[in-house]
Length: 424
Image (cartoon, rainbow, N blue to C red):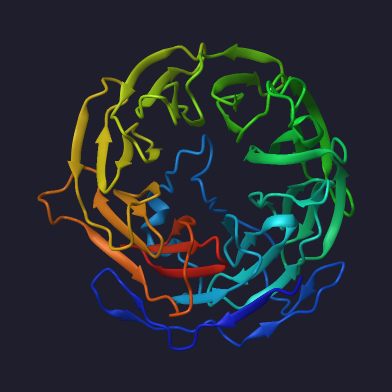
């Protein structure tokens, strides 16, 4: 698959003050398909000091921390840019110099974090029973990037996209459903495509834990694997445990052994873990609230909000932010009390993502990002907006992933547009 990255020359990006930010994406590049990576530049870091993940780190909290608004953490030579690539229908991970974005079928592209130039690309070639595997988050460790696929966990050189090695997966019928990285261990949930016709999914699930690392062709080694009695969703690693839902039933596995430590009641589709408070936040409940579970027993303690359509995100202090349609609200998970609520109108429909960035709550729609003070708005107009001035022929069918660093925001839209602009 050719990965065409088109320079957005002269495309203006609206910043938080309503002005226009300049910057172009560099020369256009069109790569031919090949069995390996095609490098268009050899620039890249020799090693890494910090990596920003699209879900905010351990526990998938959606909190990018204080570095998200500190310009000292902005990529060197930064300026706003916009590029198109066929690889970016999944999430991205940011290293100091390279933004790595994933696509379905195991596709990857490495872009210069400063100006969007394509550094290298890997074509899609991963499938399960003829169906391209879903895009998985790129796990960046040192100067390597690891991606889970049907063939196993594949390691690439972050600097040039060269394939280094593969740790074989559980088998040809197993499709990766989700992955999470914590303390150098990559946890991957798999679905047995041959068992998907079974109504109860018995024997259709698997979770593995792999310690990443090594040199040369060495990818790492498997620590454990656990069979599940249903189809697993996105795994979440935090506090020495791995949390995963089977349909709507949350499970907690021991992070060292893979043994099931706790099983909760039905009614939980997605999990966020706040390790400091010992709480697990479940969304996708039948009543539309966010359920607060005890992290040890997975027993329900209380509920937050109602009609939740995006979120939750939770910051280091335990403040929980959600969206209900256009309305953004913040809650105290210990008491369930609502701290504040605001209706900052978005121009492109309701927000579909909620995050924390320093002292701001940010919500993400198709082409825009709106931010509100995490401490609470002073009045109904106390919010700021970033809107990408996308090409006229571009029509996003869904809201993409976002990540924030150094006062900038990276948006990876499912339709292949990647945008770097000002964080409002």
